[in-house]
Image (cartoon, rainbow, N blue to C red; front, side, top):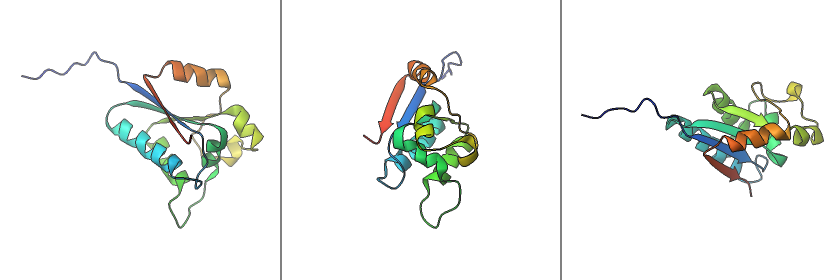
Length: 125
């Protein structure tokens, strides 16, 4: 008889995206990885960093594969999405100009997120 261990804590995966959308497929691959990890039972965080913050700005529908749509799916699945405060300010991105459901914390909160992670994947180089 198989017993399920209900005392184990889920693994925490943090995905850092450093490249903007459409410069390569890295942003789309990162978001698909986040969704797959969530399906497999991971607690997943996505952190948009450097030009990766531009993904948050893709708020309207497009007639082609849209990383903004992928990001919305990630948020709907309960995945924690944050983006760098300084990177956002440098690109004039504010809560009013990005997809709903994304936090813009400071660098120290990013470090805390990394410390709490079992694995960290960086997409974008």
